[in-house]
Image (spheres, rainbow, N blue to C red):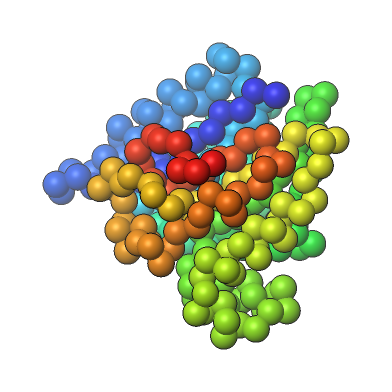
Length: 232
């Protein structure tokens, strides 16, 4: 299975007052054409499609053009929300994007609500655990879904994330290709300094031992600097 993993497009971002959307659109078309030329089986987009929760029409057009392009080439994709995205807004667009063979996760879902699912890809099956960005506010709601004490989740973000990751990835086995998608900061990560620093502090990190060993590939978004995961 040939996978193209991309993240952190930040469509709509401005640099020193200059809208970067035209160059981001060109880069996205380049990525889409690369996926087609390389005959990629599946595209994983690990969050931060947009730079703002209320993106411009031009930014939305650039992003949707990407999915229309790869969808027309019959390449499926899976998308999760990042900390810059509006989860409910992405969920609202999910039905439309499904027409381009894209499966979108805005709000967090636990395993039995669709957070873990099987996706036929060619002659194989990908079992995908999809974990959009989780803030401390939202993890309370996730805790309620898992029938945990919500108060403990507010105080112990990392423990809550460990429980959530375990819930999503418990169904991994060796009968299919296991893929885990998440938008987060791992412990010891080196920042590119173009990230939103508040969501990259120690309060929002996970440790390497929380990542599932059964995963054949882990698609992480959030940190803009290529690097390995310390301790994994």
